[in-house]
Image 1 (cartoon, each protein chain N blue to C red):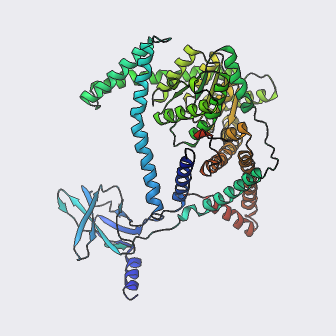
Image 2 (image 1 turned 180 degrees about the vertical axis):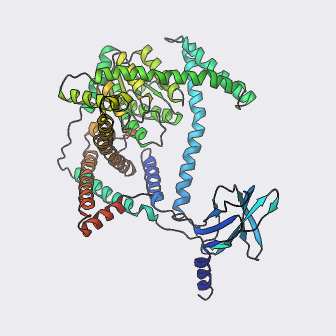
Length: 207
Length: 381
């Protein structure tokens, strides 16, 4: 029963959602929309679960003086400060919550995002090392594409931007679409395995 | 029947009409491919007359008087009336309002809502889905009957056991990152399936497993999956719920949190399996900097190059979905993988046929019709 019930629920929900895509008629449409709404409700309610887990984990770390526990009060203070200002004064512009969001969270997010430039540089340095003929081909392609995207590329030779665009639109696009078609088939196969209860490891059941 | 024919005639004649006021033409029609009960109105307006404050949509009540059903901004140009009775003819007119005064009403138009059993823009997709599903199910059945099925070697999946073993030998944890999307994303679901297998290996080897998550529901599901894996391995005592944590829903906040965990806890093996966006390289490069063996997998085409550059092994697209079957070697699951390959062959044949048909269609009409049919099959609304 522990496995049977979830498998039945998965089967029914899976079949209804597939039918929902093709059949706009009631009751399939109503049930399909209802299931989507239920997911939204469950996901929204689960935010409290996440917040509770965050508090529980960090309080536990402080209580047990676990390794690196000194970071936990920072998390808790930040969490409580944001929650309290939001609850007390609201979240509209110019209020404390929005002030903290705009002057702390947004710059910190931007900082993390800007780190990407340096990570791209270090990853590109490794990836573009011409260690064999395939890596050399990659390096040459990348060089042409990058050169074609900046004005100096066209100034060196006016065909460079055209070649760069062709490389992006033809071989690159073909490769991307091949990956996407393969992934789409993977989605179909995975969904079938789950709907028909063949894949049940996510339930902790036997293979 | 006597009443039906004039009504039909009225609908056909009055579906589009034109007038001389601000609203020049109005068109009423059943909203296509829905569950009925809705009529869509579209209209054009005069560029010469002053723009009104709003346009009031009026519907003729059974008694013959006009009733207000909604008002829209003049530039919107469309309105959908809902909760109507299917098969009944409804008449509409649009009245422009300027400074509280109604202007000349637009032409009267009529339409009747209808219900559709099948979405007309998705019939081709339905045919393809049925064919693909049949192929995959046939192969699953073949696998069940014990047919020997060859599946090519996937290096990234062979390395899963080595990665967990390495972490155990080094006395450092294993970190599993299930992407940043919620449980309604198929890649996250596929990731949960692999998490179960990785958790079993971690439980067998006695290695600790960290799962920082970006969504509450994913955290909850991860906890259950890992708990079940530890139970199955006979190590329920080794399960630590506090190692599977929720960090934040914020994309870069999550990346910062996971990076901090990597730097402080220095995991020996990192799995990045699921949906990733711009944070993919931030996570993978930090993982590399702490010396972890990294196995990544995603179907996000734009992130795959970053993973290839920064990780030891990368599961590309479909390999992410193949992981569970590959790791378990269970015949039915392997059958589904073979079915996937056979379905891919069918799609490749269709692509070649389509290209040849579209090319030859310029000179030979039947070939063009083949290409048109294939275009219809693959067109989705």
